[in-house]
Length: 214
Image 1: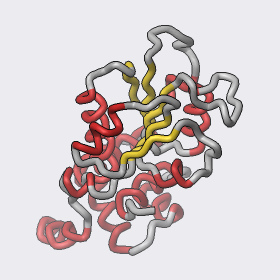
Image 2 (image 1 turned 45 degrees about the horizontal axis):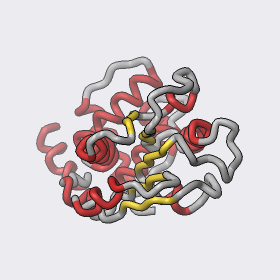
Image 3 (image 1 turned 180 degrees about the vertical axis):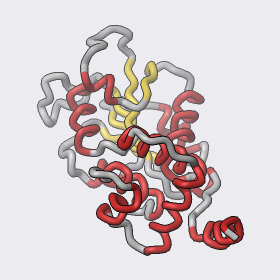
Image 4 (image 1 turned 180 degrees about the horizontal axis):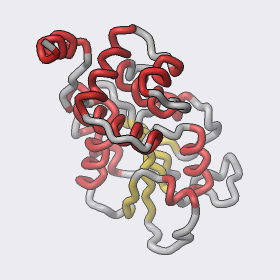
């Protein structure tokens, strides 16, 4: 009976293909020099890929609307006068938007490897890495945000890190179904459902998955 109920409820959750994700996923590159990977991604179907030379405000619509950020650590962060420029910008972005994936890249192979901005990034690449490596990370992180099975795994990791408890993918999916059927994403509801004191990260992940368009 539980299996039948799960199969009945499951269609309420979006199970998006990569081509569907490409249609709305917004990718932002922050780089003060023209970067060819931006056009390569557009040609690969990631039409909502944009590049800006620097960030004028952490609350700019470019930042708010982006689902995935690529940040060059050289030449950016100057407008907001971060002492460590790009690394300072990354730290600020990750602090303000903890669930927004941030990938850093650089032509420099030396630098402050202990800066917090480096440890906060979700992935790192050399600027001259093959464009396929950039595209692979776009696919990986966009699926974690918008593909049902990958988002369930992401929620599982986030829940286990927050609670210290182990949970199955199926239990996470059941809770996601419950939230979806409620019609709204409420942090208080998620706290009660997952029995957590702090559910802000889970709420952000779930809200983005169910409502990807800002």
